[in-house]
Image 1 (cartoon, one colour):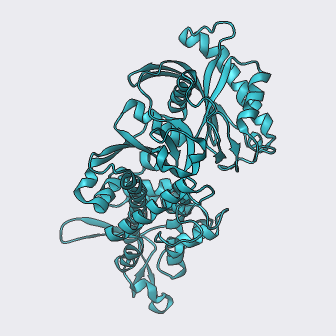
Image 2 (cartoon, one colour):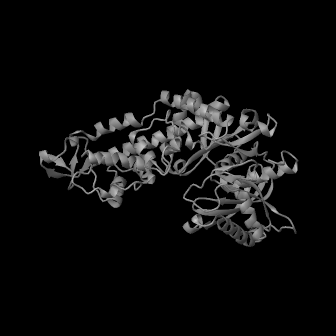
Image 3 (cartoon, rainbow, N blue to C red):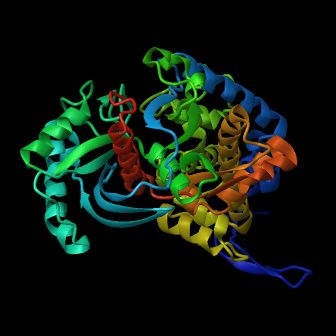
Length: 499
């Protein structure tokens, strides 16, 4: 008689430890042969699939560096390396009141930021929920809503919170965080290439969103001047450097992934026609989630990654992001589980239909599985029984936790490859630098930052310890305001006033 998976009991090991077992009796010939393989055997197979060796990581870093270079040389590349027209670092002397508006995926955030210099600031903010209708309705109506919320905020917060009284005709500089792909020819302008994050507002793609927003600001007669249109990753870079001047790179590891860093103008050949001083510097928004898209030559994709890609709304695109981002890690794990169900390895005799829908297994579940502190892995019992109505054995739960760790660790080590490519390109390794990192994966996934650091040491050896990531400053609020301040100072000084 062979034990399968129904009922429960316990067994005491020679060590004195008690293990829970869930069993039901079953005739030998009814069982698929795959169950005779232990979960440990299956785990070894996945370890070889999802493990990145240091040698493979170094090869990815070299290919990544080449891709960054090509994006700086020529427009229209897969990794576009977008010039942001943010010139150099903040001096620390920026001061004054600035408005920041952030049009995010779910909320509109409006901030009043008082920059006090020397890395200090104060912030007052309000959030306004965006409805699904607003995301799909006419684009000009969306910007009217943004202006309406800003009017409410100014009427209530400006005088009450800060005693900020504007003189007649005085306008506050506004930094607008608009984190959707745009082509820019100067800092206060941007043509929307395409909506992402579930937006589909009509009559907006291919148009200058700064002009549209200014029209709404004028409609409500607001005392602001749109000074800078920025991406949140660029804002994160500037805000983090303002507070911690050793910062050289900013990264976002959340539902998407991206990086920004400061480049020398002489190393951005595609903007030579602007005749900017080659000794000047400009922040670059990499949009690196697209690395290795279409060709798929460098990243180690498993068959599960290929299914994720081919069933996504944009097959072939965002190849790097699909191995790293919080949007996809849970789905990768679900596909492995479904394959093992089909092979007769998991959940014998149980109805597993709830696991069969794409994206039902959230990346948050991987975080919980990895951080389960109990010997019995009770959190994992809870996830599978509550959300998917299946019972698990201890061996299965240990397997699920190990699998989550493999997928989470691979994501962090690939993230380290991206950071290492910029570090290597810019020669930051010996002097060392800080990397401001933000996003739900970095902030909430257990061990993500430590695994990035471990990956950097595997790539660079002991010198990899010179590169340190830390929780970044608020890019879309504080960063946006600081960039507005830097831009106003630069233009008031007559420097590149048309950029």
